[in-house]
Every structure is written in C-alpha cells, then in structure tokens.
Length: 122
Image (cartoon, rainbow, N blue to C red):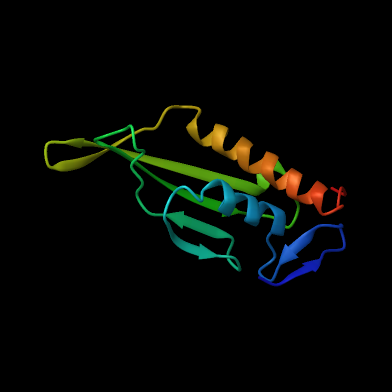
C-alpha cells in the first residue's frame, strides 16, 4: 500500500483515500471474510458472515472511503442482514444502530492510528 503526505497533513493512499481510515476499516472488519478490497477506489466488500451465536442469521458489509481527510463523513458503511427461513435466505434490515456503531469504532481506530503515527492535523 503506497501512501504519501497530502498537503492537509493526512496520509493518503494512491487512489486518494485516507490511509488511516482505510487501515482502520480493514482492521475493524477483519472478523468478516473480505471479498474485495480496492484501495484506489476506496471500497471494501465483505462476504457473508454468520456470528458464532447467531444460527440462521448472517451479515455482509460494504464500506466506502470517500475522502482524503479523516472525517466522519468520509466513511459510508452499509450493513446487510439475512435470516434463514427454511432453506432460503431472506433480506431483513439490521438493527438501526448497527452501521453507526461499527462506523464509530472504525473512526475511533483511525484516529488512534493517526495519533500513534504522530499526525494530529485535520
């Protein structure tokens, strides 16, 4: 992963997305199998994941990193949920706060990575 300093003080990947946000998203979603990770396009797609305690339920996520800056509006996270009914998987909305809770964890991790790197500029 190539990074470079952006005039605003942030580290950015070759495609123009924030390196800390990218790494934090991969770290936070690492419990799920990653189907696609395109750093240049700023897109991470996971495959379906069934939590160990949730039989008959599975989740999938799509993360879009939209900016060079580490900002809350630079991350768009979509959570998909399916429940098993008989032999079929049926789309069902996730809990209302699922995406925002995970996004908050990603942003917190990104800020920590930036602070650990000594870059505190916004």
